[in-house]
Length: 310
Image (cartoon, rainbow, N blue to C red):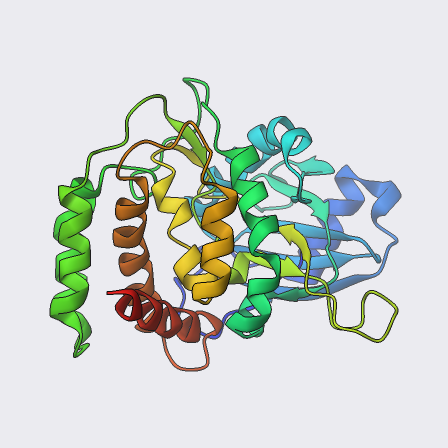
């Protein structure tokens, strides 16, 4: 898992994590790995991440609400990974609370590459078909005990009040046009059929692509390396995932992405109308992050794409 850092504000941690703690946890629970080189990689919204040797990472929740998200990944990624055409951070080892640290933690693969959010949308167009194949494989009926998530995969009406408040407070000059997109989504048919698996947060910063020149031929290799951060994994309306095609791609990439999913029998009428409404929600949220945050530009791009289609 490549830890792509974010410069935006994040919630305060409720536990102190440093390299000494991580080394102590490894020594006590996975002593055969404790001698590998340990380096701090990222302190994100939910987790602290340390690289361990050349191809592993230690991921530790930094607050209580993130603990349950990590448990979802520990439970479900080994089940989902074999059916997916892209690498995902299947936990290699689990860790238990100890050494004064109150949460479960995990050792996961480290994927060399770069965050797709660090590249431009023209570059991201290059993996449109691959990302569509990922969704086509993921978005199948989920079991009854799939994780519940109150803000992903739910009916749009469940998010209506929050989204309207956020949009009103955004100060964006395009508020009325963006609100119209949201209203169209609310008016579209609701998701029909079974609840489908939903990644929950597949924006460009949770997509790792190969670093330039990784193909060894002197040409940039921009294919998908991995899709990471399944903490928001849930089941429900796939439109909340499909929305990110307005965040990742230009019109050309989006056309390729949608064409690759055109025959998906589990998508119901109104799926893409609802997806555009979800995209508006995400884009406004991300555009409101500080400049310099890798998702700020993603949000600005998403708004431009949505309004350009309008």
